[in-house]
Image (cartoon, rainbow, N blue to C red):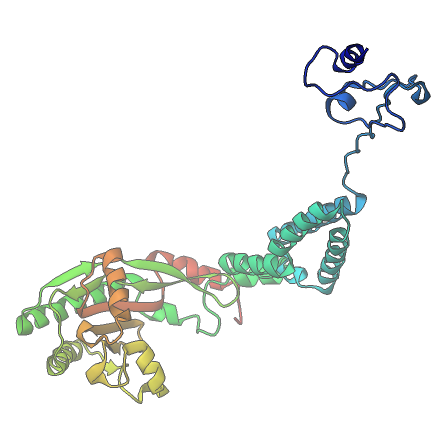
Length: 376
C-alpha cells in the first residue's frame, strides 16, 4: 500500500517533486507571462471554475503620437524663417527690424514654449527652438545688413531720384572739374613710376641697397557718395622694398634726407613724418598702437609722406625695423605679408597712391554724363 501511494506521487521519476492533486491546489492562480501569453494559450471560452488554469494577458500599449501643438510650433517657425529670408533677399533689411516682425517672433516663441511643456510635443518644440536660435530677427537682420553693405543696396525699393543719383559720375562734395583739371590716371602712374625709380637709384648709390618689387598695380572705382560707383578711380602702385634692413636711427634719417632731395628735384613737398609725436593731433597711445611706441627711437615702423597737392599723387616711404618689435606681433604681421606677396620682412619701402583720378579713355564720357547732373 505504501509503495502504491509513493508511485502515485513520484510518477516514476525518483527525486522529483510530487504532482499536484487533480484540479490543482485549493486557491491556486496563474497569470499569463512570457511565452504563454504570447502564444495566446488562454481561450475566451475557458472556465476558471472548472479547475483549468486561467491565463490572462494585458492589452498592448498604444504608440504615443505627436500632438497638434508641436506641429503648430514647427510649422509656424518654418514659415517665419522663410518670410525673413525672403525679405532679406528682397533687400528689406529695415523691415526685418520693424515692430511687426518682432511681435510675430514673440508669438512664434510663445507657441514653441507651450509645445515644450507637452509630453508629445516636446520633440518638435526643441527642434523649433533650435531653428529660432539660429534664424531670428537679430541674426537674419545682421545677415541682411552685411549683404546690403557688400552690394551697397541699402534702401530696398529705390525711387527714380535715388537711381539717378547712384549713377552720378563724380563724387559728392568734390568739384566736377577737378578730375578734368588734374593729371589723368595714366599721367599719375607714369609720374609715380619715374619718381620711385629716381629714389631707388639714389638710395642704391648712397647705401648700396638692392630692391624687390612686389604686388600689382591696383585700380578700383571710388564711391560717389550717393550709393553708387563714380567714374573716378583710386590708384595704388606696386611696392618696392630693400633687401637690406635699416635699424640704426641715424641711418634711417640719412635715408629720409636723400629721399627729400629727390622729392625737391621733382617739385614735391618735403617728407612729413606721420610717426612723430604731436603730428596731426594723434595721441601717444595711437602712435604706440600704430608704430609700436610713441618714441621714434623705439618704433618698429617709420612712415613718411609727401604729395603733389593740389594734384592727386601721394608718395609714402616706410622703414620696417623688426629689432624694435617688443611684442613679436609686428613680426607675425610682416611674415604674413611676406608669405602673401613675397616682400622682405624689413627694410625701406616705397609706394605711390592717388585718389579721384580719371582714366583718359573715360574723359569724354565723364563730361557727357555730367550734363545730366546740373547743380550737383
